Length: 99
Image (cartoon, rainbow, N blue to C red):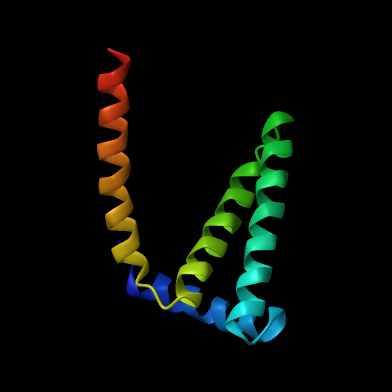
């Protein structure tokens, strides 16, 4: 899913983020969650204003999500693949209920 070059950059960003936002897992995770909330608010505001910059902010949110996975020593690809299956199953179930 995530190519090696991209994964290396995500890991490098994560290390820089830990240096800046908090070296302990608890402090860094707390900061990541705060930043995620702030990005969601900004994405909602920009999308409502029809400002396409919300797409860039969505990309920033994705990086924060990747960081949260790395912070918890999780393989990004494994989580993504598991979530694909969960979403597919849930959506199919919801579609069936709607019929």
